[in-house]
Image 1: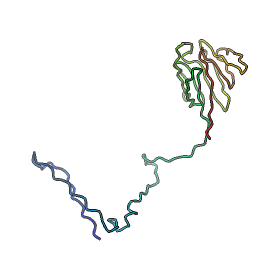
Image 2: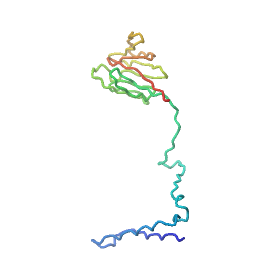
Image 3: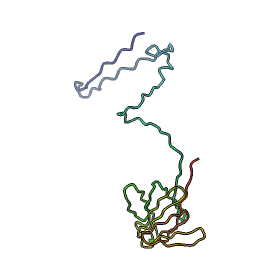
Image 4: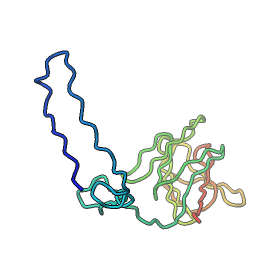
Length: 178
């Protein structure tokens, strides 16, 4: 079997007179009809795709890694709004400022009782640690029996129930992957 002739490359059509169309490309050679690919291999082998292993300089390659199942946490407000907690430490407020690496969780508040930077929430397992960041309207922690405790400015408390920032009530929900 002879290899198909290679088309002659054309570098430029600069020599083509104005108004004359450029020459058409040569048609592709017909596909073999005897069940063999152009190089003499069976046609099915010609369709096999082999991907090379990625190298350090292969920017288009993506390697899939196994992830452990974990816990997704959300902050659920009394009005039903839900916010994903993506960081270990979350600063909550209308327009919160936090340290590098902390999740900043802005919550719109029509009552305007939520401070710009109101509280820091650190969630670990089924408990949270809540710190009042000197908020104007304070942080209230609600006990299981309904008792409310107002934190002092800068005070931290550990819990697992509901809390109120200004007049905005909320609690943390954890969903475990199965």
